[in-house]
Image (cartoon, rainbow, N blue to C red; front, top):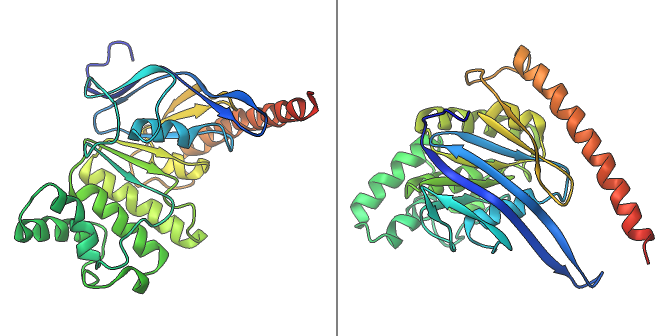
Length: 271
């Protein structure tokens, strides 16, 4: 990896995040010394025990939270706050209820000052991409959960950010819809090759989507393993590489969950 000549899109260097817990009245180290590199066009996944800081790290990359120490660079420039060069898709459907599907997808383009006709043309391209042609004049309350998340994904792609951030985007969907959406996102990534950082607690989700998986430890969070997935998309559940790496990830996470539970017990027992 040290001789890799690909363009580094996102780079984190010794990132640390400390916050004050008003209940315990003490500083809590959420993230400690995370360093990583994500190359252009890669689909990278963060996975780890519940509460380990996955979403916190993603929110720092998005510019929503400040880091305590370290630095994060996008295309070599330090991140100092939110910007249109990063698109984000949340677990909840953050759509404007008074706007149609087309209006929601077009929103970021309007902020960029693109004229209405061109914005509609671009928005329809991404509505097509996520399979919602014919629904462009529907309002969010008329859509299923999976369709709403397709709209959110189309909107994130439409204004062409340098980096796509996804914070457990399928977490609130039913199991069957979630499987469909994972396959759809894999297809979309193969077509668009947008550099993506994706947070999940699902090993199966990570393996079906990722080029690279960063496994985080229990809090304070740090990277304990990096796993690359070489199989071509779409990936079948019985793919030998996926089966092997699923067992490896499960073993690592099981140890971290046990360690996390042990740490919580010690904290509760401390005066």
